Image (cartoon, rainbow, N blue to C red; front, side, top):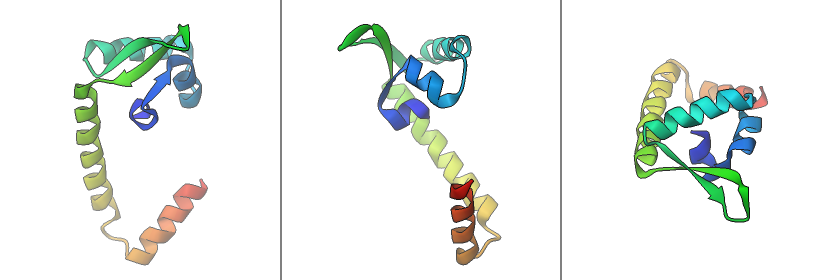
Length: 95
């Protein structure tokens, strides 16, 4: 999801943004590459840097996950009124 949000992102930036250590991120990247969801390429401006981007399969996967998350959120928030949902969204953003 983080790669989808960024479009393409360096492994170092993703590691820092997600608060993970490099070894954790390396294992995660290898797993996602193995599943065909992301690809790693050299940054054209600095070939020492690896940049991640989604494959078409990765984009499809992200879209499916977003649908499930949206449906789940709708179910969880169903008991709240429109005003309560607005208030909840403000409180979550504040956190």
